[in-house]
Length: 186
Image (cartoon, rainbow, N blue to C red):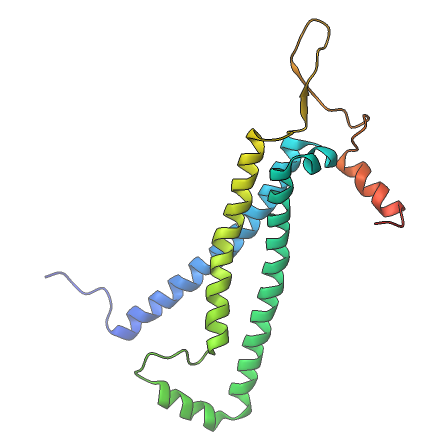
């Protein structure tokens, strides 16, 4: 029989918790990067605000990615406030906190967290995995269905695809933003 890796069960549990925290941090970082990459990919492929808006798949891809970024920020802020509240609860009455520790010791329990923190953590992890994947999937579909912002136009005797000009009837992203800022309808 081989040598034991851990000296006791507590050491093994500590490594599990540390690994969980590390992988959760990586998931958070990569999910935000993935959502931003989907937004950038949509702009790179479709090129103009008009082309993005004409392609329903791209429009949904952008909406899902941006909604994820906002929802992630909101729920992460909520999680931080719940941790802050629980920290205050622990600091307010140290004797009560010690009694709760004794009561939870050796049992399956959410303590020192709350049920809300546990559920919100599970929801956030699920969102961080699946929502950027949905946005990416919608982007991939947009490549094959709908307007990609590139039109086949005849140039002389060639029928090579020519990218839509930002000076044409479709404004570039920068021009759209400038128009939006200068208008009162924004």
